[in-house]
Length: 308
Image (cartoon, rainbow, N blue to C red; front, side, top):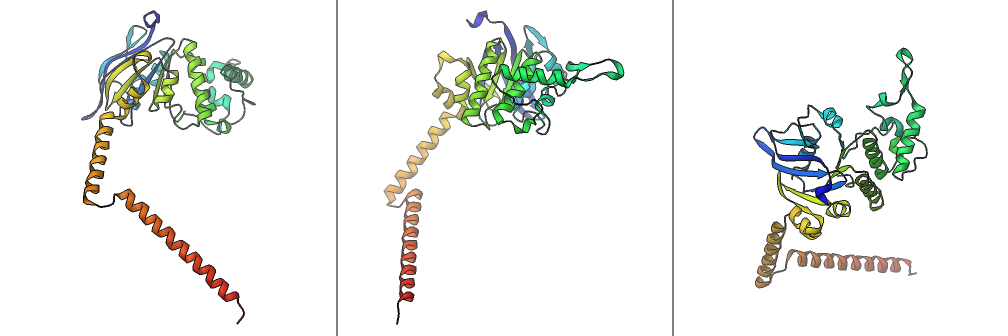
């Protein structure tokens, strides 16, 4: 039951203004430990601003962020990370020419230091073992932790970023469009690990405009539209098609369809061709012209070859 799960993070009436522009107009959401919340919305819905507010990049203009029952004010991304909120952005924040291990421990090199004082240095052997073990836990077989991260597939790179966040103690994992640039097979790898993170009792916030991917791993869904929350729905209370209509603007699509039908009826009443019909007729005429030209070329070549 949802009530038995301890709450990981809650956002209450978050407002974010940039000058006179209101990017978020009172967004509320919450996610529990061991739960995946899908944040759905089209481009311009406010998803990116919500991510940056929850991860400490932008302080909210109004509203409150609550972590495990305690209100918090983030002074920056590092502060959010210290509170257990880890964000994997769409660009992954990785350096392709650096090794898997170096990317895994980037910014956290002190976690695998050996020696003291002047002899203190990065323990590359222990770091390689740790990176390899953490990747193996999620089913990614890294042949050599020293290989450049740019040699990995897009899905494997996503998994490196996710494994890094989990290893360093994330309680809430925010994923920014993790499957947007991936093929079907690579996306399935990422979705499988999202499900594993939920099993490990992490709260996962899965931000995407792909309803099908969110539906595969989500427990509930919050729909954003122009910086406002249209509602939060448990998976068993709403159909996938309803979510798609809410996110894509079902009313606008219906109005557009009605307008196109009206145009078609008007063209039919006038006895004129629709743009599609006119285009098809033009293509047929062009094809006929090309056939005639080819036939004439063959005939001309045949005449040249005959003896006089």
